[in-house]
Structure formats: structure tokens, C-alpha cells
Image (cartoon, rainbow, N blue to C red; front, side, top):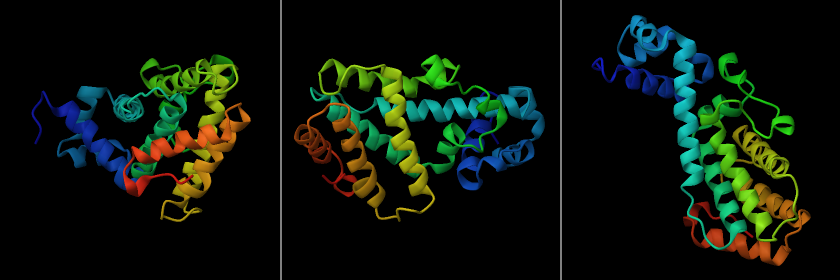
Length: 227
């Protein structure tokens, strides 16, 4: 059993395990407490109830997601860096489908979904700063591509939202099984789609393909996007 000092972390870890194993609907006080090897009293003592614990779980998930996106090393090719970030996004979503649903799915608990905002009006996807960092990373990637003259100047948040929509839609369809499980969703759908979008935004197709090949060369062979 966890000590008092580590009990909050134990409950968060238990919640994340339960989430990944059984889905968002499984995040109930008694189930999380049982998974953590403690009583529901500990959950209420440390988090005030499930709303507080869900908030902590969401913060943990968003922090890890943001780290995955921002751990991508930067180069002198902002399009390649954007594509590498997209690959990291795809890997995270496919490896952690229930965490992804908690962040961006329609089945997220109301206490989490209520913090989502209309980014077409606010320029951000959430009113929680610690959850907004992942969208901020995407917006920064868009800024770099514009600053380098690779895509046309435009509202950075809107362009980021358009590109996010492509990634999210492809991920959701692949998760549902429409693209199989051999990586075809990435190589035959998402990769070419993103290149088409970037070309439509002003990039040169040959140069965009070179950026894509650069990402393939620095990625693991099993996850390389095709050109």
C-alpha cells in the first residue's frame, strides 16, 4: 500500500491504468481506490472527490502528451519538424487510445470537457493553461513554417486548427479500425494528406516531400512515413 506522501500519485497512476485498460467510463471512485489498493476515503482526502482526481489525471495525461510533442528536436527545416511532431502525435494517440479520448474525445467526463473552448473565437482549445501547452506547441510549429516562408501568412491559431483537424480525424478513423493495423493510416492516408494540405497552404511539393523524407530518415524504420 502507498504511503501517505505517495498516495496522491498512487491514485493518479491507478486512474491512468484503469483508464487505459477499461476506458473513461471505468473512472469511478471505488474502482480507482481498489486499483490503488486503498479506500475511497483516501481519494476524498487527497482530491475532494472524483472531480478533483479526474482533473489530476487529465493534467498528467496532458503533461505527457505535451512532452511527447515538445521532445521532438528542432532543425533548420520547420516543415520537417512539424511533420516529426505530427508523427509523435500519431504514435501517442495510437499507443494510448483511451488517454487520447480523455483529452479530445466526445466521451470525456463533463468536468474535463467543460474546459474546452472555441478556438476559432479564443485562439486556444482550452481555458486551462496547463492543458493548452500542446496546442501551443502546434501553433509554434505553424509560426516557424510561416516565418520561413514555407506556407502563406495567415492566422496561426486557425491554421493550427486546420492541421490538427487532419491529424485528429485520421487518428480517430485509424483507432476505429478503418485503416487496418499495419500502419497504412499513416503511410497511405495521413502522410499524403498533410503534404497536400501544406502544398495548398503554399509550400512547394518537392520541397515538402524532401522534408517528409528527412523525417523518415531520422525516425525508426518501422514508423517511417512513406513519400
